[in-house]
Length: 482
Image (cartoon, helix red, strand yellow):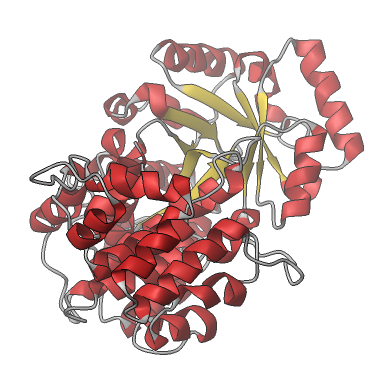
């Protein structure tokens, strides 16, 4: 995984992953002007149904001719982790204002929401975006037979049924069961809402692969009743718990028997005040200090030789296809001369962010940090020329405390960072801070669309362009980890 990251971040020979952002950038439409930012861009209004977004109105009308106050729609994604706290899926949705507006409207608008959501996924080339991950989308039961679903990569999709409507149009139990089986035969996975809360789908419980529970309902008595109901109906559905706020809630849900987990706990900081960086980080920090102080090459080589694993990694990388040396490099001194000080510094920074391979949560945090890093690079590169590396560093180190499990100030203290990078990470100040805020806002865009709009305005881009860059960054992060 890190060979690809090194190749991209360190100016080595670009590989396919490195070219992804440039190619995608060339294919994308130019940023909208301020006068155009109120309307959806090409990605905001899916190409297969460009008129659909216009029918979502902020006033709640179902006739688009009755209002000119349109709501732009953009795609949001939230990670879903397994028991090992590794990312195995993403929950995709439109931003919360649209979601809530549609959720409390008619079935027709629910279908409209689902069409736009699927259109966004198709425009994002979801089959390439996911890698080995799954995508989870929420749809009304009557949308199960919609032909648009046939365009999705069925083997990678979880169709989570939304709570039914009180109006007409709900599928009859037998029809629902047959439609679910048809979709499952095509490769889709089916999820149902909590059958103890939403009883209308209880007849399909034995066929579902997942049950979506809300964190506030996860009491021991509730879990016991649900297990009993599943046993009675022969259901082997796994539990997906949504909106877990903190790590202790994840642990409780796991203890109750859940298999998949969603919520803010993934990036929630803990009390690590008494912890210090580990010996590996400190050794790398010592090297970083020598490099930043323009220390003697022989002295730096001696420090590297004290860590056999680190020396081996350096020699392997310098001799790899990503670096393409003209002749084999067999000594640390030769490697340092080939590498150069600036590349060595970047390489050591990346090593400092390497997660424990046995710790799923740090792996998940690193993936999120990589998405932030690439997004900052894409967003700020044009407006802050020559500072792409610093922007990348800001994103990469934004979750260093979770990766290393020490307070953020302690995590980055030994890394000899530039003042503007430190200011963005610790104080939210300086020229890079708005771009980090925008990356964070994209992660919360589902719940805080106004925050996303405000952050995008500070960076002089539209929310649609920001979310496009966010998905592009996700695609890059997937590729460098493949």
